[in-house]
Image: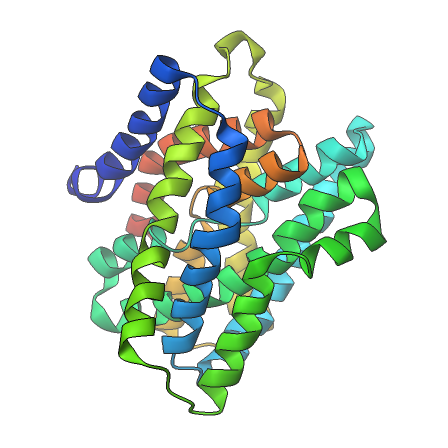
Length: 299
């Protein structure tokens, strides 16, 4: 109950704000999501990467993240081949299941469950996931409609990509920027996650319950909430030799619900936004139970 009150309830309330304003005013979601993608998220990426402590722990996390991503993508491709899905549906499922909400959702849960040392590791993992989402998330969102070459081009058309490169160069070169400029970037970036969550709530307000694709939602929930942490366990126990605390962080982070940022990408490139939104919502609600069980198992 404490996890629900301190972590889940605020998340659901923000979704509710978006849902309520969309039911009331019927706003243009695409315009709002474009502002988030082209202004707020680049600032969030830059501020996060610029301030990150890029040490050797990153190496293990990078290896883990790419193995996990590749495995989940493969699972989706096999499932989509069996179900004879379109490319758009396949990529919508990848957006919904291969990218987790390791940031504003995952980090407080890990802090509450394992303490400050684990929280520091969770923040590093969050930064890495932000990098992966801004490359591979955009790639899979654009690929279904525009093809592979156009998808790669889309990655390099997105402002977060250049914010990432700039922040990495400054971070690794130990180049400092003015506090006033950094405070402006941080202020704008801090608005990204709440706005993304509001947009998700708005998108859900446009859906009708009877339009929910429950078979695909069930698959998405199973993959994101159950298969993902199982894959993470296999990687950290049988493939990689990682510290026990880091193992717990990676397993729990891998069990987080779908990343709300993927809803923006799905909206931007029209890659099954209704499906991505519904899986994101349902996985967030279901996570109240699944994460509680998982924490009792790995603690």
